Image (tube, rainbow, N blue to C red; front, side, top):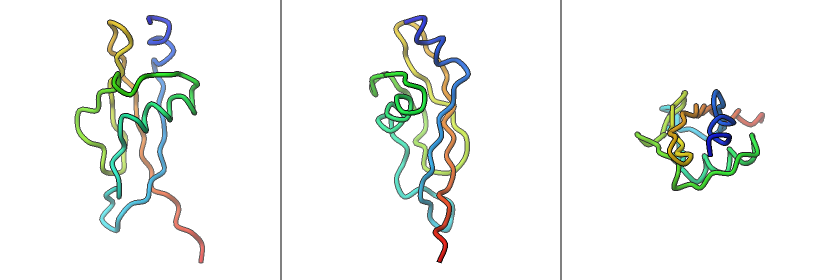
Length: 88
């Protein structure tokens, strides 16, 4: 568990999401999405129940979430960017 927590130290994950005209996300970033992104981006498997999102992530920006790795609570940065508009 300590090794997994150390592997998570200093890491961040990125999401590109569709946003409304006011900059709000159509769908919040969930614990499940964070767990899937960790596996995809960093090859770190974490149960979605181990991820703590203090405030729902519903807008663009950087957010800190906590990941419980055994007795250790590790911070993880979640960066949410708007999807590029499709060229017409």
